[in-house]
Image (cartoon, rainbow, N blue to C red; front, side):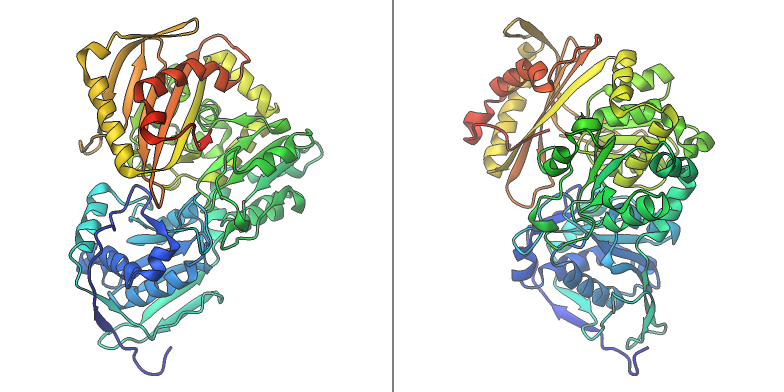
Length: 564
């Protein structure tokens, strides 16, 4: 406890016009937060001001980040402003680091009113990289559109912020720290907690750790390779997989969180996690996985580095969901996928007579269904998978789910996938990312494309490529009516659906800190099992997608930045 009360100041400021949060929060280059006067302060005050004063007085909030550059400096500002804005207690991860799934877990465990997550997810870190601020609500999930709209409106008219500049917190020491503030009746408390323990305890209650320990370190154990990509999940992998479940220490690589993620993109896909893929090619490992910076995304690999698409991963977990003890107890209430994700999950849902929901991209849509007791398992093609244990996607949970399936089925990843395709058929799926496109050029292209597909003559139009003919059955701009509250989300992506069920989808992503990312998703179903390369199978549809959109001509790009 400080000897004398700390001063609370009200500081004049001026608004910025560019603080509209996307589905993943406010993301900008680090230099924007560092060089623009009070840029971070304005946004944090806008968050606090969006919470009713009666709700935030004396309340508990959770704060943590993925450890990227500027994380510690931002936490210091958040702590000082939280105290000045009437928050009673902050729970912060040790060293300011806590995974996004763990923050969701801790919000729910401590019944906090909200949380602030400092991450730019899979985007690069370091002084030249990206930084982000994301606001989560009392259910542990991302803020709704109504809340982010309110934050944006406040940020555009903000005139002052409250701060306690003399308040200094020790992020390195576990335990409680209390501070007296002037004109405050109760002390302000900061609690530094073990970032891993609450999350690890939740996992113990979901999975059978005895079964997992046997497959990972028993007599006939499998060999695994896990790449934390120098993100926040490294300590979780070490504690849970190595120390508790008995994996050899060298099973886990790049587990020390770094401010620049070792100079690499912390993005778990075959392009950016190529070192992991290469290390598995010789067949010495049976299972591999990679995680992104904040621990909510995952990539699953089989022997020899064979890639399991996120869409297939979700469908396989659904088909084997009772290998996970948690679902044996709770039952399965529903499945959901984002609209661009392949329809592989749909076939499992239909066969098992479980309700399926198709939502816009963004985990908050899943959270609403979960809160209403309508959803148990969900996922997105962008390497996100999760259950209703928290309200965020959860990379390590997905890995433990796969290991539970391997332990029960006693088959390889490859055999499980092949058997799944034999049972349900196969959805071939790919995504083309065109990064850093001029935002005006991207929007103009999408507007013109919507005009084209909205023409009545577009439906029934036939496209021929080589020996393939595709006929348009439906084309629209995806619109979602939430079955829980009847709220409507419009303009969620342009869809072209063909008579054979194949789909082409166009979206502008909201997760980049600069420029626009235009994404083309291609999904095609084959009932008979064909062992053909995905890009070869989908080449005719890719040709059609580029022809209709004229993307290369409109953007000046000769090809995608990333193919997954």
